[in-house]
Length: 66
Length: 422
Image 1 (tube, rainbow over the protein chains, first blue to last red):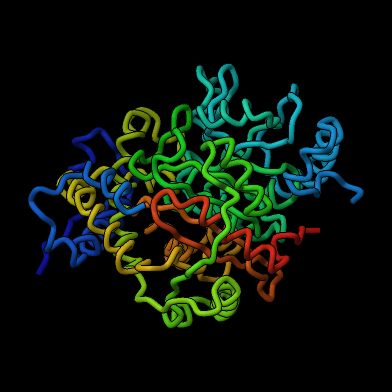
Image 2 (cartoon, rainbow over the protein chains, first blue to last red):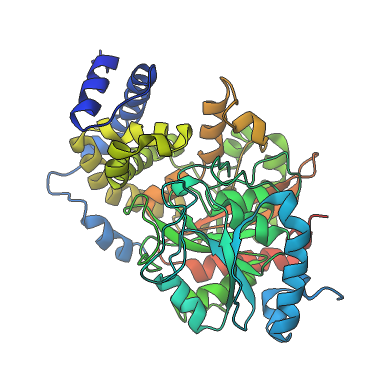
C-alpha cells in the first residue's frame, strides 16, 4: 500500500519554506497530494518512460507533431 | 443595423472609430453595473476598433492589478508583446477587464474587485479566469479581448458566456509582459464574437498563417464517452455539432482526461507556488482564501514528481496525435460537460459540493494545457435555463488556422454565435 501523506509532514515541509498554513489546511492538503500524486503515477505511459527522456524534448515533439 | 456595437469585428472596421467608441461606451454604461466586466476604463482611447483586455497584460505607465489586492496599484514598466501587436494593427484599448485573482480560479469570482457576472444571467458564473473578457465580449461592450489560458481560462469564459475563444499552442504568442502563472502551461488567446473575428485578432497577434484556409474537415469524437459523462443537453448539442462539421466523424477512444489533468495540476501547482513564494511568505493575508489555498497546494509537490511529469509530456503529446487524432484534423468534445453552476454554489459559501463542481468545470480543459495543443471553443446551443452550451475542437500543435476554419464553417451553418444577451 502506498505510504499516506500526513498533515504533520505537510506542515513541516511548508514551514521549512516559510509558508504558514491556516488551521485545518494541512489535513486537507495531505489528502489532495495523496490523490493528485497517485492519479499522476497511475499513467501507464510512465512505465515506458525512457531514461533519456528530458523535459526539453517536448518542444521538439511539438514541431514533429504539427 | 442601428447599433454599431453589435456588428462583427470585420464589419466594424468600416465604421468611423468615433461612432464605434460612442456605441461601446453607451453599452458599457448600461451593462457594467449588472456584470462588473471592467475594472477601469481608459480616459484616452486611440482610434480603431475597440477592444479591452484581461488586467494582466502590462502597459507601460499604467496599473495592471492582475485581479489582486497585492498588485492593486502596481504600475507596469513595460508593454506586453501582445498589446504591442494589437496596437500596431490599429486596435483601440478601452480599459482593463476583471479577472480571477492572479488568473488562478475557474469561475470568475473576485473578492477584491467584486465578482464578474454572466450577461445571460448574473446569478451564474462567467467562467474564469478571463472572466471580464468573456462577459464584455458576450454583452457586446467590445469587439474582442485578450485572455490567458493555463488550465482553461480562455475556454471556460467563452463556453459560459456563449462566445468564441481560442487557446493557442504553447509558445505560439509571446508571453513577454503578461503576468506569469505557470510558464510551462501559460498561453495567450483571443475571445471574440465568432471564429472569423478570432482569426482577425490572431492575424495581428501571430502573423500570417493562411487564416482564410478552406478545406474539408475530418473530426474525431468519442460519442459514447460524451453520452455517458456529459449532461444530456450538452451531449445532444455537441454530438449534433459534430455531425454538422463532419457527417461521418471518426469514433475514437477518449484520451485519459483525468490522468492528463492530474499531470497538468502537478505542473501548475508547483510552478504557481514558485511564482508566488515570496508574497506567500511575506503577505499571505493579502490573498483571497481560495487563491491562498490553491497556492499552498504547490509547496509540497515533490520536485522529482514535477520533473517526471514534464519528462512524460512528449510521450503524452505523441500518443494524442497518433492515437486520438490519427487521421482526423481535430478532436471534438464539450467545452464544459456539466450544468453551469451559480456564483453562490461555487463561491466562498459554496459548501461541500464545491470542490467537485470546480473539478467538473475544468475536467475537459486542463488536459489540453498539459499537451500544449490549441483548442477552440464555440457556442453550440442553449440549455433549458437559457445558458450557453459549447463545443471544443482540439487540434495538433500550431493548427490554429485549421481550428478557426472549422469554427467558421460551423458558424456559417448555425447562428448560436449571433445571439446576444438582452
